[in-house]
Length: 69
Image (cartoon, rainbow, N blue to C red; front, side):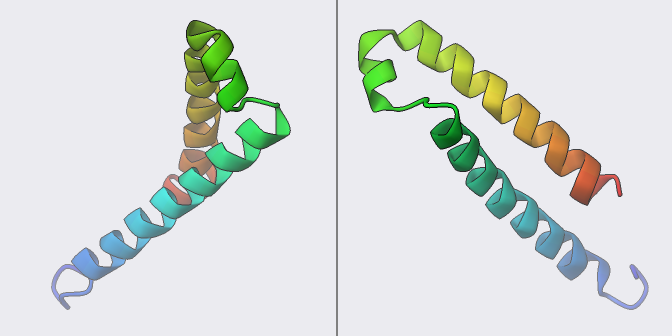
């Protein structure tokens, strides 16, 4: 792919797909688990911990399904 000049386009496409899927998955999981702005206003540390947990799980899923597949 490198010699044909298609590698960078392919990698860019995979990166775009991964970022879009990550954003969608984080939003969906936060909504499903009830992590919202009211929790952020009430207890910021709990909100940060929950969002970090969700983001880490989403990244693991994306890596397993899209990047390392």
